[in-house]
Each structure stands twice: as structure tokens, then as C-alpha cells.
Image (cartoon, rainbow, N blue to C red; front, side, top):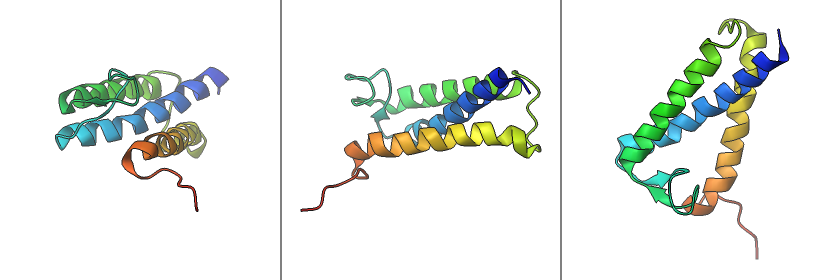
Length: 109
């Protein structure tokens, strides 16, 4: 298995996980951060922008996972790379967006 396939699958997993909060926010009519907001990644974008951004993430994830290499969802070794990509972006997002939504690390007095 070429290492570039693993990199693409890792990125595919990260992009797939990134689609979820944007689609959920958009579908529920709530604004959420996107790269198009001011400031990027911190300001809020409309629900419509979030739906479009989330759908774009789904398309990119599909391309990276299904059209790079011979990804097999039933092969544990193939699933590890996108799973690590998903875990990485989820942990990053929890720390980054937690600052804005009350889920960040708080300092104890």
C-alpha cells in the first residue's frame, strides 16, 4: 500500500469528520464558523454557507477515500488511516471551537 494513499485516506477521514458539524449546523438553521467568515475560522457563517461547506467536504472526502488507491472499508488496515484523520480533526476542533461554544479548557481558580 503506497504511503500517498494513506495520506489521502487520512485527509479524507479528516474532511469527512469536518463535514458533520457544518451540515448539522446548517440543517438546524444555526450559524457556525467556516473559513469564509470574518475572521476566518472564528466568525460565524450563515446556515446556508455551512450546508454548502459541509456538502463540499463530503464530495472531497468521497474523492479522497473512493478514488485514491484501492480503499476497502472492510479491511481494518485501510480504515486506520481515515479513522486517525477523523480523530485528529475532532480533537483539534474540540479544542479550537470549544473556546467559542463553552467546551474549551477552563482554568481553575
